[in-house]
Length: 379
Image (cartoon, rainbow, N blue to C red; front, top):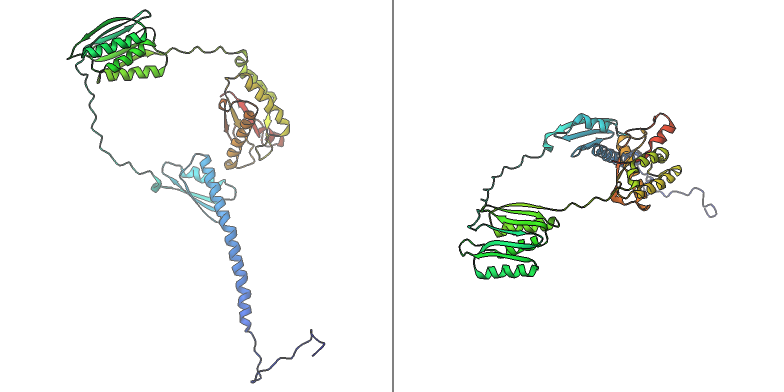
């Protein structure tokens, strides 16, 4: 009726006098299915990442202990570990069982993970070592005063080339070169390379061929010169034995400074009096330890040849899988801070040791603080 919008309205009747009604069982079915669908979706959302997380952390824990090539499957909170041949299933099971969140772990070996035997191959036929050609014996001797070249070459042109080479070296030259078309040295370029090598030698030096072996003696400047001479000798007499007895002068070691002589003792004293400890569960040096990092940098810079190891540690509050990487992060953080303070990176190595080697009892708060540390030491 007009003026009554919230009141009951008349219901129109059909010609048969019956009123349409929505079946009640549809609402009942919806009331039952909707909660079940929601519960299933929530279970999928909740279960999937949890199992993935447990599997990933289990694999990380195994890798931290040096066990690789492992298969881990997780059903709910129960883990199944399949290890390759050669790995210890019991050890793998114990590692995974201690991963936080894992309720039960089982482990088995899997021979299918073994590396296949290599396919046998036929050994190649060894290449025969060439025998020296028919070359007459020769020698080249050098002293501080002169060169003496005693060698046979194939023709006069080859002899002239060697003479020009010797004259170009500006040394006193004793010419004992002969021409022998049959047994003369064919590769005169290799011989001139040997002559240039001798010209850079120190003191007495020689190159000689006795029919089977080319022998090189004396002192040359460096390893590259020695290697070049060996290649030239092999080219001069193919198939001959090369006895490369050239030596290289040893560089004099610089004297050890007083700062370096006392470095290790001073480092031990610094480590005793200046601890470097961290906030719990982090790789952040606590405030009282920051001056210790500065003092360590000054000590390391006092001896430029000193090399040290930066060792990181944790207390025992975390799992083995988390404590080892955290200790490595702590060692890396201190190394990075020392590099910023001017210590060369190549003089330091960083390594995490996890919960190993505690310096105090982990049963007290003070002891755990002491164990959350970095030690700097001579390796």
